[in-house]
Amino acid sequence: MSFEQYGSVLAAIALLGVPCGGCARTAGENRKLTIAAAADLTYAMDDIAREFRRARPDVELPTSYGSSGNFYSQIRNGAPFDVYLSADVAYPRKLIEEKIGVRDSLFVYGVGRIVVWVPAASKLDPAAALRDATLKRLAIANPQHAPYGRAAEAALRSLGVYDGIKDKLVLGEDISQTFGFVRSGAAGAGIVALSLALAPSSRAEGRYWEIPLDAYPRIEQGGLLLKDSADSRAFRAFLVSAGGRGILKRYGFYMPEDR
Image 1: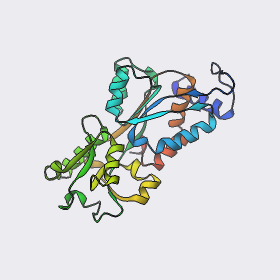
Image 2: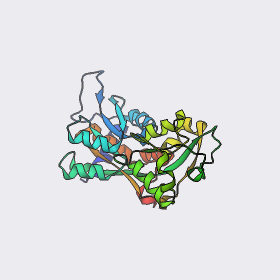
Image 3: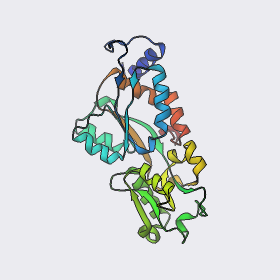
Image 4: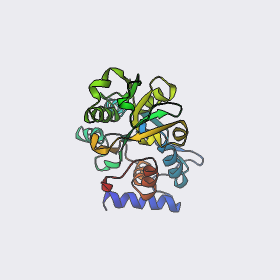
């Protein structure tokens, strides 16, 4: 049986409510699946966790958010996560090469996009903000370890505005902190993940302009199971199912086959 078939069987078993062999626990005892997730998944994961737990209500999903590069380093040093969801599939691929994680579990769960976001009260036009002389600070994620930061820097160069704006850059530790800089007023605009701009609260708080996809390298996002279990495989199966992908699409991730 292939991994995809195995994942589908697990998902079907979970949805049918059939007990999973090897999953027995003391009555009332919840299991935990610890997840290291790229910060662009902050809002999408709320919906993902809610839907996953409809089928497996006894599985808790404590999730840590941060930069994919920092998580990569932590996992290499033994951080006790069960699942790694990276904003750059290259990081989980490196872990596989280093014989860390479950070899047959690597998967791509979506492709991210970036936008220029400004607060609702701002006089800046997000489509023109990068060339607006009144913009004093532009927030981007740190390109050293955040895939969205590398994409932002590449877009600035591709659009021909990097030299004029590089001294205005404010670097966030990850894309969530970057977004926070703009929401708090520490920066007048920011290049952030579309997934953050599409969150209900963000729609009410600001406006955005989507940067053309051909202005930056493709942000292919990938996951890896770090510990092999029925729960971790069921979670992976859900993410790549129609239900999981439907949630991700609502938050601006398109699927690899869509392009």
